[in-house]
Image (cartoon, rainbow, N blue to C red; front, side, top):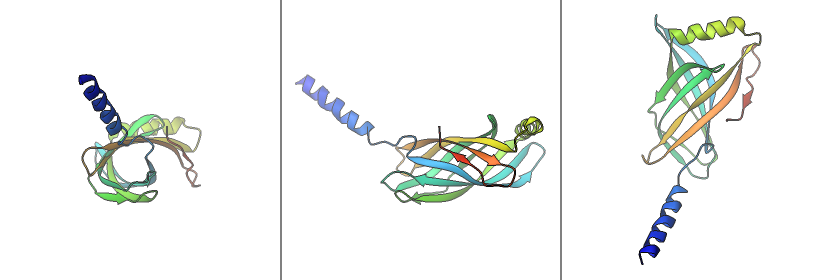
Amino acid sequence: MRCILLWLLLISLTGCAGMGYREGDIKVSISSLAFLQSTLMEQRYLVSLRLQNRTQNSLEIKGMSFDVELNGKEFASGVSNRQISVAPFDEAWVEVEVGSSLFDIIRQLQLLQHHQHKAFEYRISGRVYLGDGFFSIPFTETGVIDLTGSNPAYHDGI
């Protein structure tokens, strides 16, 4: 009898594990980046993020946290508590203020001086937190910011 109860418990736990979300269920990409303000030690930017729901369920997002890297170096980080609903197989945009330190900017300027190409590779990674409080969805996305003025070329996530 105990074996049957243990077996039923394992089956039910396996079923619950399949109910969660996984990386790839949401695609988060940078739509735009605008300078806001600067102090001696910190710079603030407004980042517009495109959230693409790749599931057949509506996503009730209660917040997100993320980090942005440029050319493999830490650049900025941000959080948002903006609640947003993304319908199945649809997309939405959210604007988030992010901050970077003086040292992050100095690192990027040094890279720019030695960078022969007119583009920056970026990587954005973080988590989207869902309204039910039980689930969060990790995301990682890479792309290229073209400084020549032509459209940025985006690459699929890692």
